[in-house]
Image (cartoon, rainbow, N blue to C red; front, side):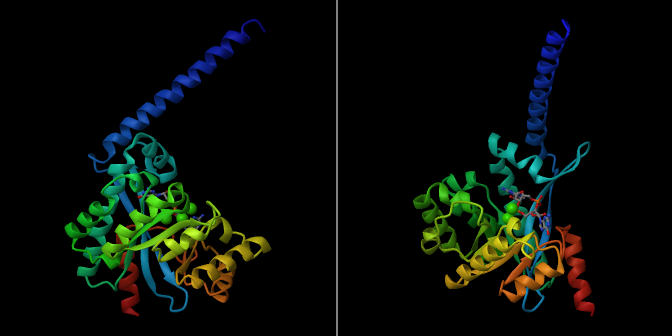
Length: 279
Ligand code: C2E
Ligand code: CA
Ligand code: CA
Ligand code: CA
């Protein structure tokens, strides 16, 4: 028992040292990932419930590390946000997504709107609208083909500032959506003042929507709210036929979820349309 104290203590500091080293390693790996071209985008289709047509895709970043493999965003976005690396990453994503969407247009794919996630940090920096405009100009993508997703908590941090940034983005002609809607701040008055086009109902309300009466009530209320304000309602994370039936019956406009497709590589999006065209 006498050895236990120091041994445990050593274990503790070793574990801490390891955690710190891992973080530092991760940070330097992440720092080099852009220049080493290790980021890639998958795209998840968004489907119109009335027509079944794919109207858009959400760009979702992946880190392809030679040793770590395909790293999901949950494992590096928080670190990228803490270290500020997210600034370069989000701008890389924006450029890449605009370039891809412009290439799809040029290849004759049906018109698709590509949506891109922006972190709260982007939102707090001056010149966001200019950077978005520059990405559109570089790719020659029409602004109406780009949608920017920001979370409810991002816009609620400073609503006056948010309203002005959103207005300058809107002035470019891009579409704006509120991501993870329903999970953030519950003041709804801002919706009236923001030039928003889309509410994305958070997956946490959809996963149990056919079993949990509260989730069903919330989903219905968000759809009704969206329509009252002339916005589109998009349900995230629809996985089952029952969930899709519920969403259709309750007038949800679009779904994005594994039921139709998980996020896929660009070639698979192209194949999806090639298949449709062949039918
Ligand atoms: P998000 O913006 O809410 O994206 C939707 C997430 O839900 C994606 O996870 C997607 O793969 C997942 N999903 C979609 N349908 C289903 C479904 O039916 N079932 C389940 N279980 N999951 C589904 P992913 O790709 O791991 O991304 C996680 C989060 O990372 C995103 O959540 C977003 O907040 C962030 N993220 C991804 N790419 C970027 C980016 O380029 N920039 C920034 N700032 N954040 C990003
Ligand atoms: Ca999103
Ligand atoms: Ca979301
Ligand atoms: Ca989410």
